[in-house]
Amino acid sequence: MKMKTQLINRTIIVLLFCFTISFGQMNEFSFKRNILEPKDNWHKIVLPEDIFSKISPSLSDFKIYGITNNSDTIEAPYILNELKANTTVKEIPFKLINTSNKDNEYFFTFETNPDEIINQIKLDFSQNNFDWLVKLEGSQNLTDWFTIKENCRILSINNSDANYKYTNLIFSDSKFRYYRIQFNSNVKPKLLSAVLLKEITESIIVRKYSITKSKTEINKSIKQTIVEIQLQSVFPISEIKLAVNSKYDYYRPVTIQVATDSIKTQNELNYLYYNVSSGILSSFEDHNFDFETVFAKKIKVTIDNNDNEPLEIGNIEVRGNIFELTARFDKEAVYYLIYGNRNATFPRYDIENFIDKIPTTLSYLSLGNEESISQNQDAVSPLFENKLWLWLIMIAMILLIGWFSLSMIRKKAQ
Image 1 (tube, rainbow, N blue to C red):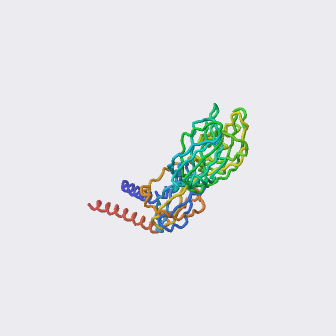
Image 2 (cartoon, rainbow, N blue to C red; image 1 turned 45 degrees about the vertical axis):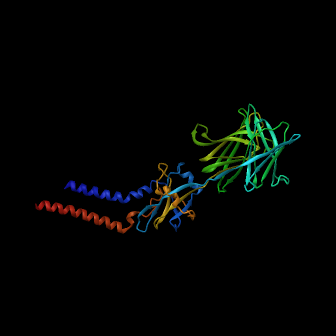
Image 3 (tube, rainbow, N blue to C red; image 1 turned 180 degrees about the horizontal axis):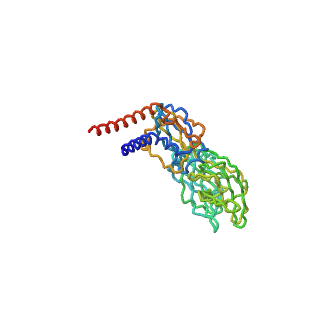
């Protein structure tokens, strides 16, 4: 009798566990947002910027759960995308048809297909240490020449402190049969190569993040300018733009770092940084530094001044790409975006293998306000609020107890 009673109790516990396990999975996450009114099978959801301080940097702790009218819990599959600018570069065939000079003025003329559009010419010279102002012209007949761009500065610096070349001509889309570059030089230039290109970069929307605090410190002992930047929260960043107010020419190595951890000492909090990008801050190029997306709140930019005067740093912009979910909603339900579990692993869904079957045009769904799951355990309607489930469990228990009772009566009768 005692063994049968234990068996009944264990069976009831198993039933209860099976019915409640899905809700326990939800409670492993910290936050939820209602997904407002899915109308179709496929939709997109843009992740709001205030969500990133509460999730894993691996972006692995997202789930989309739905609660049906029957209180069934379903999971909607999704694909996470980072919206990045796509750049395509097409190399345009050409012929160098003329190299000439008059006194110290030199000309290089290229012939190409008149139907091709170009917007960049990359030049390479054998000389080092030059500084030339180039004029670029276009023509259809070698007689009538039209100015495309002038006073384009190209240069080469090669010494013990630097090895730097900037010899690219970047201009608006142009469509000519002939292109001619001309410049003055005291030495005969030796053109090693030229590449004519058409570069197309898709225009995408990026987020510009608020900077709550920035500090610029000049360390004369190590000849560096250190700019410390603090954002409003933790954000995924992928671009930093520096404005320089100094009017003279400059060429400075730059390192960009983000804080990953901190060590508390008796007097202050010291941050540990790691490198995310390095390059050259130059008066000849844009001051945009792009890198793979990282999560950051504190950023450090180090500029090596060598023996030069420190640069006057102006406005700073920190930007990041937008992340979105492409999700499939198979059943009518009330859906929630659940997140905030740093121990979660990436979910694996079949739709990842059938991306070509996803419609190309999708509408976006909005998210409701963030709610804490830990403070409100009833993130969804509890299973046992549904009377149908209660009746089913009660019937199952009655049948189970009755079966054991009949078995015992039969044994006694024998």
